Length: 77
Image 1: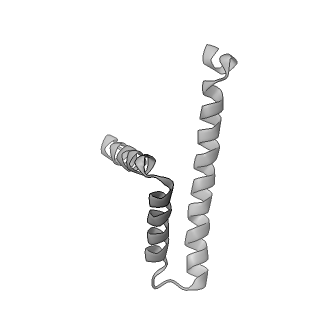
Image 2 (image 1 turned 180 degrees about the vertical axis):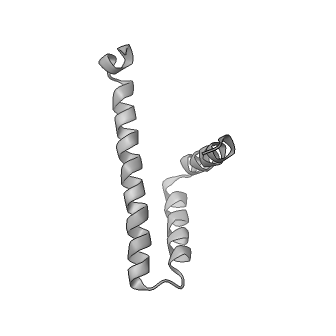
């Protein structure tokens, strides 16, 4: 991934971070409805499960990084 792509992802992450819960929920609903257009049930399930998997991996990485920031053993390495 090049630096431009990384910066674009950081900008989107910062945008999402600044939204309140209602705004974030509304955006997620709109994106879900838009992505589901013209797909059959099986395709919707595949796309939904893919994003669910991506989200779970990101949550694992984020939780581990947050844990390691507070772990003095990890910081001493």
